Image (cartoon, rainbow, N blue to C red):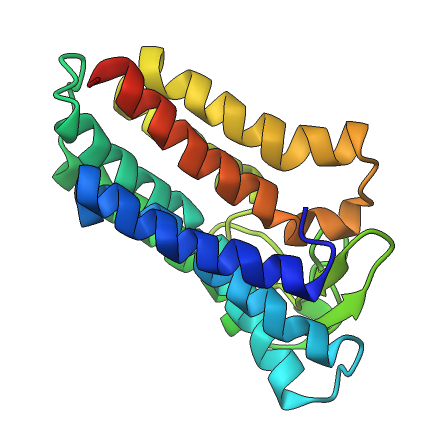
Length: 229
């Protein structure tokens, strides 16, 4: 897990290297997921320099960028898995990307808007694992905590339940036999293991994305070697 600044940097460069490896054996559209999660680790690396300095504009910017990264993760996962399905010539691929890509894109934009559009302090959500009164990256017990001011969920403001649903869309729309185990693997390594076995506090789960990114990349390699090699 990314407990230190240097380990975050290692994971960041690993994402870049694995991107080029996947690009070579498959294509850049499948490989982009590795690069995307590598970017998160670079953001975490720089965040270590500004922890708890909540009035610093760089701290605030890094908090916003990490939340934006989290908001669009379902879109990147769907995009890469769709192209992986095409690459391995999955016969169970029944749905077209063009039909669902805009839906997921709109969902991710609405999630991102929770932080980008906050009308007043009374509209700020307080009960979620990443919620805070203002955008800030703070010290934590195991890792650091990412806190962002989020607009309360409502009709046009999706909650994190919807975020979880977007994560499961690849398994539902592509091929559940292949991608459902993949999604389960993501949640096991990215959420369940840190929370229940490593005892990472709930407020810090949002920054323990190194396990999640590794599971993404490892999952793609497993699928590739099972269905292609």
